Length: 207
Image 1 (cartoon, rainbow, N blue to C red):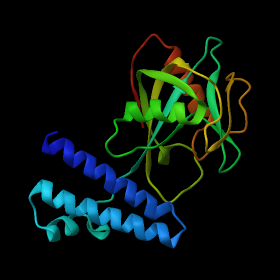
Image 2 (image 1 turned 180 degrees about the vertical axis):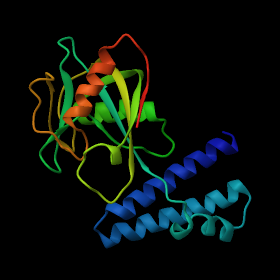
Image 3 (image 1 turned 135 degrees about the vertical axis):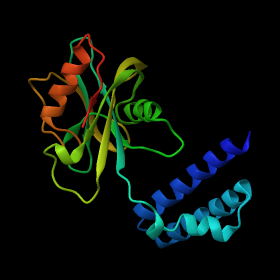
Image 4 (image 1 turned 120 degrees about the horizontal axis):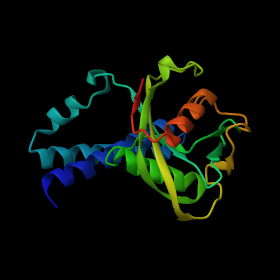
């Protein structure tokens, strides 16, 4: 394993620790995630051959350049041209499978991973459909600036079932959509994605 691979793994550990610090409510877990983050910084300093102080200063939150968060989603159709969707436990509404991008995992890998985790189906990426800037689409307001990456995927196996953090999973025709989780997907976007998926053109949409 070369130093680049080592550094990518350390970045992944750091990202997992930071995600844990954001979402955990348990003080015991917070201590462990903080320790894990500190270990990752020490390892990063060693691999990068930089003083620990330099690494810590580089990753101070107030010095980070603010960039958009990235949401990756998979658009899947069955043989009836029905859309694969999952029911969110957060709001009890439906969306196409997806979630936040993970450090150390490519966007297409995230799309495939999220589809399987949320619906039980194994897929492969066919092509990239486009990127939506949430600000220019009528989503509900939220504190983050978000880009949504959309991949067309095809089913290769698995069994349809709700993932551990989902209430349900199923296929829906475009003209009979369930109540949508509009923070995650809009009807206008589903219609647009369907059009892109069925088109013989391979143009990529942006914005």
